[in-house]
Image 1 (cartoon, rainbow, N blue to C red):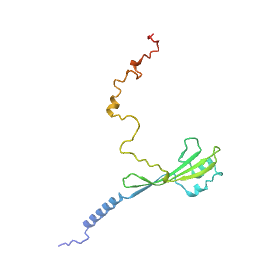
Image 2 (cartoon, rainbow, N blue to C red; image 1 turned 30 degrees about the vertical axis):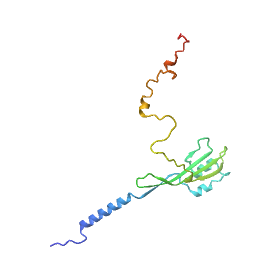
Image 3 (cartoon, helix red, strand yellow; image 1 turned 135 degrees about the horizontal axis):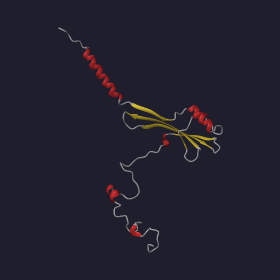
Image 4 (cartoon, one colour; image 1 turned 90 degrees about the horizontal axis):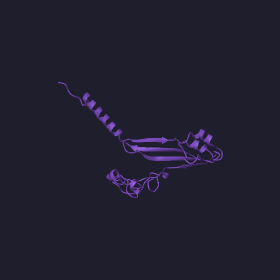
Length: 171
């Protein structure tokens, strides 16, 4: 008669499958860190000096900016952000650095500023609606609200006068 040992091949397979399922299940709860934008090198940023560097030298040192100010080309911005998410949750910024390089009209560097995550505006929406000024109109009012308004007096329609270009008698 054959004896079964504690470590039979089917037991090992079940143990391997169970451990694999445990590892796969635990990997779904890992933190995901991502980097967005410019990779800031402190040594390169510190090498940009006001009064010495210009647009060409800043571009050669730091590369193209993330974006340029909309009102004239006086400021260049380099944006770097570290994000963290747990499994399938919404990612949240953990660290952010905005490097602003300001130029004078001649194109020379006047200042290099750094801003962090404390400068980010936090917006808290109120429920599922955004409050606006104006009338509260339902979908029914939006669809059928103009019926009968065409040609009504004082609304600029046909009932308010003639727009044919003729005189007061229609001639």
